[in-house]
Image 1 (tube, chains in turn orange, blue):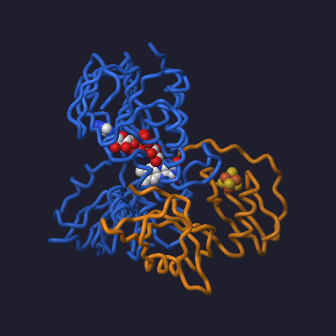
Image 2 (cartoon, chains in turn red, brown; image 1 turned 45 degrees about the horizontal axis):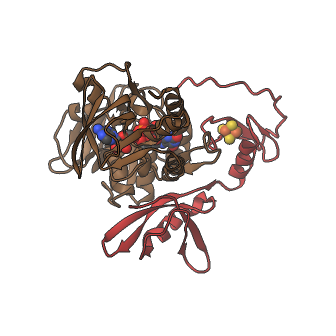
Image 3 (spheres, rainbow over the protein chains, first blue to last red; image 1 turned 60 degrees about the horizontal axis):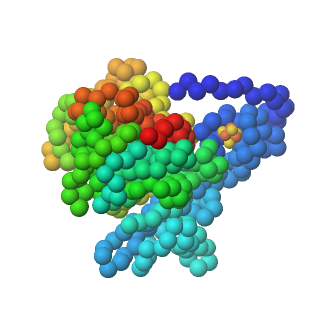
Length: 132
Length: 300
Ligand SMILES: Cc1cc2nc3c(=O)[nH]c(=O)nc-3n(C[C@H](O)[C@H](O)[C@H](O)COP(=O)(O)OP(=O)(O)OC[C@H]3O[C@@H](n4cnc5c(N)ncnc54)[C@H](O)[C@@H]3O)c2cc1C
Ligand code: SF4
């Protein structure tokens, strides 16, 4: 709970107050409190946080993790997968619908690619686990 | 079954902690190492953690729990450790004998060092002491996680989560993605129990409310959960919320019954590691601590 947070050494950059937004960085468990006006970012302890804040302002992106069904002669197995890239937050439910509709006919190895969705806008997933 | 009738080190539990103790001990030069895991595969709780958030510190990359387990298993495979899965340890003696059953039968094997890496179990006392009926639809969050992620079963459609620990937060998102409605996460304390990043990406992203200082008073429902009665302890107001499922995420208890049953204290060749020692938020820490413990064990 009371994780000691080192004070950022960096001096806060002046922000355009009319556009400034606050975010908590979720890239790592440090959870820095960020503030950005879309150009400058304050509060980030590392560059990943700066990128996060700028991206979050334009279009939040998230990785989605779930498990997909594989129907093999022995029965149904759940295969853990993650999206190959972060996807727009606004599309998460649509993407979930697509992967839920998918049925694999064999158990892919960890690291294998799985494609779901329509041919025009497919989403690539990566298998993240072994299934015995 | 086992290749020796005596081991330098026997590790009970093949989760991240047990595996890392074996890796550390092998590095330190221990030769006869035996790792016992009751499940058919190694990895422990990581096998049901399909979400991202593991390994940032140890592997310098954000992995899912399942990926972390897979990667670390590779390290273990490079050691001389003998692994027996499907083996359940049921008894220890003060003479450092480990009794276990596996499909081949029962074995009692002595060791110089015995490490308990048995993880933890979910607290269910709150579940049992909440007044009201005992209808279907009440689960611990970890059990729900196993149901959804490994067995592909959804515990219910309209859920309330009791307690704001990480497993509860992760399950709030998981249930939502699977098409259930998570009506609220209720926490009796005035602060979140889990990690802030989990609140943001599991609750805030999906508009799931977190009710702090809220206490569940009663479970209502005949065959299936129908509602919960709860109190806002800040205002004293009592309300009801219709739901068909309750997930309890009210903490974890280190699993040390093997030592307790045998009346053994850690020390004198007995060690406790990982979540069996204390509850760790991050697996990276579990791995580092385990490797360190392993390296500190000397062969004899
Ligand atoms: C839902 C959830 C989310 C988490 N999220 C994160 C996260 O995002 N990032 C992160 O870094 N960490 C996370 N953690 C924490 C991390 O996963 C744990 O701290 C870590 O797995 C603990 O490892 P362990 O080896 O001590 O215990 P476990 O993984 O529980 O392993 C214990 C093993 O011992 C075996 N065992 C027990 N008793 C016996 C017996 N008598 N005989 C034989 N075998 C036995 C069990 O079968 C099990 O395999 C999360 C944990 C949970 C539960
Ligand atoms: S800014 Fe960097 S250190 Fe801070 S939470 Fe984000 S990733 Fe972690």
